[in-house]
Length: 173
Length: 391
Image (tube, each protein chain N blue to C red):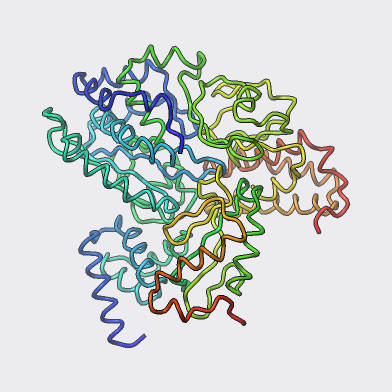
């Protein structure tokens, strides 16, 4: 990371801490915001947060590594979380998985090379009566069929605006 | 989205107005007299919980609404928060008055982030109408509620793990005692109640304890919201009195002909068709409301495999019986699927399951072997001597 980028990130995290509080109980809210903005929580961000809250960076790391929505790995702008728990499983989540992997050209757990999409499993997301269900960031899709996958990915790309035209569906790796 | 009949029939804020006219012990008495038990699944008497927190002396107290609904097959809290958020907030405010707390926190699971906007809007409307904030409806009562987002951990549905997350730690359950009603969030007395429990508390204050007692059974009074999914014609959210039999419930949801029903989610028990005459109540089959129906063609080993993968992933890893036990059970299911499990080893696994129930620190490890044990007990014929069932 460039020095100036670091300074900007540190200033933004400081602003977050001023808004959300500088005590330990603000840790998870701050981390969720950092993750949302940067799509990852790197070791520099963890150090800045630790300094702001007056705790050791390993304490921050212990929390980051515990929660499914945090984690220090880089994610795409759109994180697709397909529910794998029993009711969605029984309603055909495997076929949706196959189609997501085919359309994006990546396996589950990976991110597309352009940093747009990450495929992840989710444990029960509470949509058992309308499965298979998936979340794209905070957005919910229910009764997903393999043929709807293309349209869902298209919806995400439209959010990019000018970049939408450049997007290629299949990334050959 | 289906609205819940009894909740829809409530006069808005009738419970809160009734509570404002009562003193603290009388509110708690009303809840105790109703026999309301925790609707998250554990079934702890709500009146007792409120009484402990009410009796504690402290500068600050907290009412925490547990909306970390993560149990597989459970989605009724999502429906309640979407359709009846005011009833939940009303229940929290009543709890605040009853125990002398001025701060409320709604712990919303990360997977329900799309509910945050509507819930914050509902809170803002309540503040405008003086149903939250300083001097609620002209009374001396002050109470406010904020939303706290979880970060994706099933274990945070356990009340002490939830408090750890609120405090900015890993969601690892604490030893109990001390209980949260004495030493909870930031060390202050805290009541942690399920979404549905708080909604019922508001209904009880509005209609009186006898109204609630008249429904359900002697030991499990009242009605319950169920989340029904799986092999049935009409999955969704239902409201039934406690004490309903499994077969009555299946008839209502179009799940006749099922070979088994998983009651209480992955941590509940697998009830085979021959036991469908049993009733769903705290004294028989306890549940947080999840019912997953398995049709005649379901492979019970695949079901078990899915449940155990879930527990392996969601175990916090703090205590050995749960961290290692779930892995061993999962490996055992894989052996069974490959048809390579001896009866002696299966018996070992069952003994391990019993040990996990006894020795795990929290409800996750204590209940995760239940599905395994009940499937092994009831479907032995189906699971033994497989010939390469997995492609």
